[in-house]
Image 1 (cartoon, chains in turn orange, green):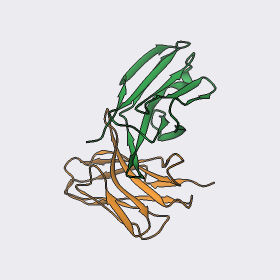
Image 2 (cartoon, rainbow over the protein chains, first blue to last red):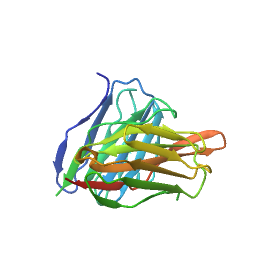
Image 3 (cartoon, rainbow over the protein chains, first blue to last red):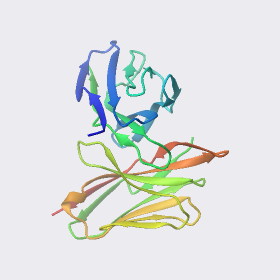
Image 4 (cartoon, rainbow over the protein chains, first blue to last red):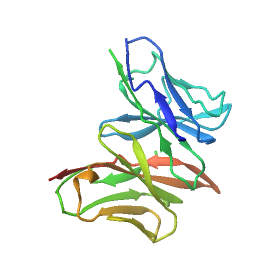
Length: 112
Length: 114
């Protein structure tokens, strides 16, 4: 079945370390997105990519970086510059503006 | 910045009661989508509304898009415990002919007492 896979489900890191969250899709979607979800804050857009080898900053890109070297993959790196990295991170993809987003099951990152 | 406001933030109902969540934008939207996120889960796409005044139904769920395409609502008739979760609206705006990214509301968390 087609879908989006995020790994790992839970991730623990020490403060000051960079960490990379994986997002892979086999839906043949061009557009991919990274969101951060905090309690009571809804979904906030970190980065997005409309096509391979191109990506754009979202509303809260500071302290994060991404790459889009393959259509299927859109990894997110949470750098040590991100002041409050503990959160639930959701990856999504879309086949166009006329259809909904497909979300992965998320990665819950805890930085101690 | 651009915002899509959603109210209420929380709603507690007795099983069998109705539930409504509202979504408002200060500017006209090209379309609006609704998602449901179960506790501990991820958002799942429910529906998209595109036309002014559009009404769509999915079993006990009724979705409406306002005439001015600035507001939307989701109404659940006779809630069940399986309706528990957070419901998000997400609006998309037009920018000179091209469509922008989805802007998510903060969601309404629904709890249902059996």
